[in-house]
Amino acid sequence: MPLVGEQLEQAQYGCIFCRTRREKSVVQALEEQYPGLRATAVSQIKHRSEQGRKYTEESILLPGYVFFRSEIEPINAFHVQDAIRLLKSSDGAWQLRNSDLRFVEFVFEHGGIIGFSKVRNVGDHVKIIDGPLKAMEGQIVKIDRRNRNGLVEFRFDDRVWRIWLAFEVVE
Image (tube, rainbow, N blue to C red; front, top):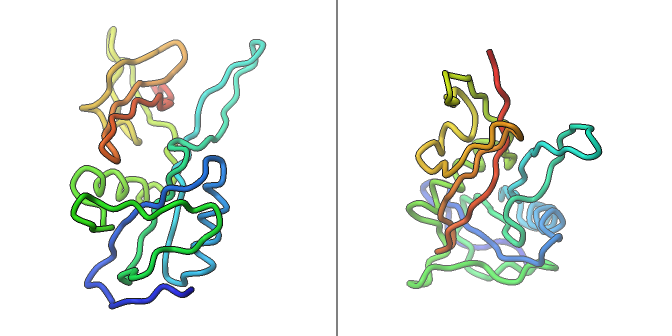
């Protein structure tokens, strides 16, 4: 079923709740079925250490959530395999607002991937100089310097999420 509705003055952002571990297939199906719509599942790049070997990996940051950007008002619910529902606010609006909107705009600005932030050692502290942690500096709960991660707290979908985001120390 095509995306139908009136042209919006500017792009609007929304969210679809879907089956966990099916985020990427829902993104692909949405973009194929609805030309002009851009969708993403939020991924993050993490530091990993196994048997003394350090490496990085990419994983889904918010399992079960797919975000989209649309310039057309969706009148009908999305009909995509593995999509459960279009999230709506208590007043029935599908458009994300306030802190949810700011978070999703941030996600799209970074191409759906939350990569490494850059930090500089300043005495006993680290100073964030670039990357996703800089934008979320006020919500950093804890820094694990040894494993190069920062625990960040943010709100989305009326929940408080705590996630570890990776950083790299630069001189």
